[in-house]
Image (cartoon, rainbow, N blue to C red; front, side, top):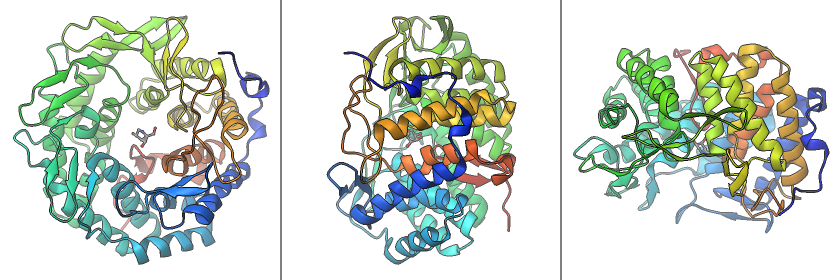
Length: 441
Ligand code: DMJ
């Protein structure tokens, strides 16, 4: 396959000035209006067939909930009112329906908590509490690590084989609910799961990719910073920051040292994070990808600007290979392993963090490259579409809700004046929903 016949988006001299907050807002509105026209009241827009998809038997309004705080941050008053009215008039969790706990927690629970904090309407919090109480039984396993699925009405749980991301990406949402309600049960369940996972790390301090929540035994011992582990690292650090929890701080420091010692790799003239055996540290694969590109943001937030900047340079190189980041790349051979681009936000999130910490315009130039290529390659009549393969540019009929929650929010914040959002007063959950460090009353 050859590179796509597009030239301007891979121009390293691309000017950051080509992207303004107004341009980002306009593209956000294009996607939002597509959702409104073709998918209103459903979970997600299908941007090619101009229809909708729902995750389960009944819609849970995933796109408007995920998009709501971006709408508010962008100052879109009319859209905020219509989204709020939709959510508060239609959302009801009293359904005999099974949901995937992780995705529901990061998108819906996180979205509702941020909505309450930004909008002030306590009905968002009531919905969040109702949802959390329905999902809390996932943590009732022998080890305290959560099952993957739960029925919202019967509370029946299912699927004991899971991964560190699904186990360890709960403390920001559940911990904040404990703060807001005064009931410690949410924080305690999420923390117990994290500690239980951490205790099962290998002697060299790494976790694997799949674990049994009933026995605590590892099923897949591949260790990396990609999907199925990724946001566990993120929540060790952000949980430590948000709750100033000494145990989480110790777990974070121990874990990041192990990851830097064993998973980091120098190849192709740059820093990457590949795959190793969690017990021996032996390199298993030189694979990195679009999901892994959240890691510069985490390194920067953890104070390691040197590694963060070097890894973001590698991410940029990965993006420029075909004008969009592939899902997986062999960084040693510089060959695509998995060619899809699922409208992922991670590399943009990392550019925003690095711009925040360094004020180096280079990160806005990178952001302009990402933005221009995304608009050029993924925009459709009705919204934005994922790519089946970055090498061909062929689109697929999906616009994940995180496109509005994360991609557009991080672009907006990257190009907006710093005073548009007080970075140091909040932590973003893994779906980019901001959570205040201290309750604003
Ligand atoms: C989002 O749902 C979250 O960022 C999650 O942590 C990882 N996957 C997607 C975005 O790629």
